[in-house]
Amino acid sequence: MSKQKLFRFLLLNFLLVTLFSTSTLAQSRNYFPPEDLTSVGAYYYPEHWDESQWERDIKKNGRNGF
Image 1 (cartoon, one colour):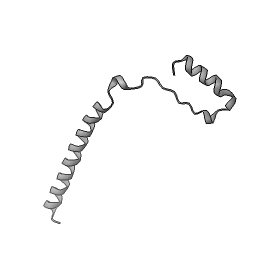
Image 2 (spheres, rainbow, N blue to C red):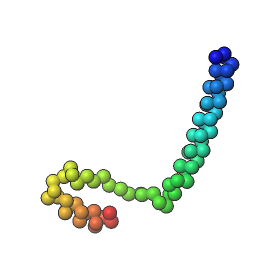
Image 3 (cartoon, helix red, strand yellow):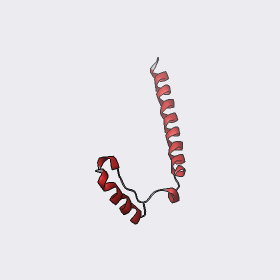
Image 4 (cartoon, one colour):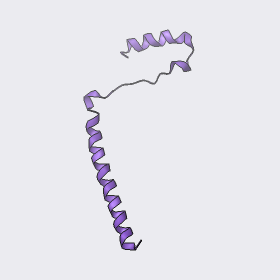
């Protein structure tokens, strides 16, 4: 492949990737509307805690609105 053909090939690929990335980014901004996003969350994996603490944790989560 000549240098000119290689340059054209690379330029075309760069432009296509840039175009696709830009359109994907624009779509992702609308995919998760701000009003639907979670503003508060908690990591909780009950399997990592003793089972005797689960009831306490569930009550605390309920009091905190989770």
